[in-house]
Length: 407
Image (cartoon, rainbow, N blue to C red):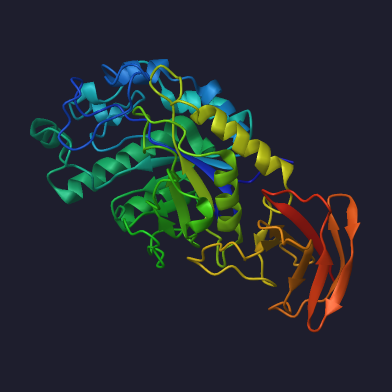
């Protein structure tokens, strides 16, 4: 059965890949505020033009990476601070800024062809109010000195994208407080089922922007140098960096265990119906990745596929993980459950020394009739209003998943 990538799909997605693949504003690399994706690990120069960046991009390899890491969606930067488009755009050419888009190479087509193979939907990042890194003469050509004219340009661009690629583009992730309502109306006009993310620039944002389908916390920090158990999770879409926002000489900052455990804790967080965790990283212009990052993503995907109770689940209601919670060493872990509530997954992230997991009464009053780990039944006994479970003799120190059956 063909997947339907409507807004509900993104609300229940658990893991994504967020990539800033950016051609710097200036070909000489002297951008006033922002850099861009490096050419390679050995060369900090950016692409010489949007054409070079788009021409070298390998959509098949990128899609393979997204698949290997277990991503359920991709957010990819179509333009950043300099608003350089990595595809041939008649909308851009009409402004006279022909240097700000490609002539032939088309990164959108490459992405769609690659990701379609794996059934991974594509959402494009756009910064509708980010004009600080565009030269004055280009701002005048674009008409971006005037806010209303900037939004008119954006509406033309969105119509052009849907006109060329159709509903294979599943939506837009708008930065910098987002666009005006009429821009979002154009998205809905082109695709009523498209998903719209609007970021207000707030970390741990508790309020969904009125034009957004998803509650977004754009920047939730890097994983670098952290034991992820000590990092808070949140119910908004959480984006955490692996290194930096774009490839610029970083190295894999952690191990797959750290990424996996944080991903599971995010999925389990109360109210997490906002696309889960999107790990942020991407390739260099030459299509290699920062040291160890590509391997790290594959290892994360291996762990996600090796453990049940992540994909297709909702946050646990019997044993609730509150937003901003940390995981102390004496905390057993977190829980998820099937959408119908009949199966509860206990993600035992810290194995008790005696091999016995003692649980309080379920917060939602569920009654459990059986427990299992993989294909092995576990001993489940009532303990007051709660339960006591005998864990496997050799549990998984990363995540021992116990499956509870509810009446």
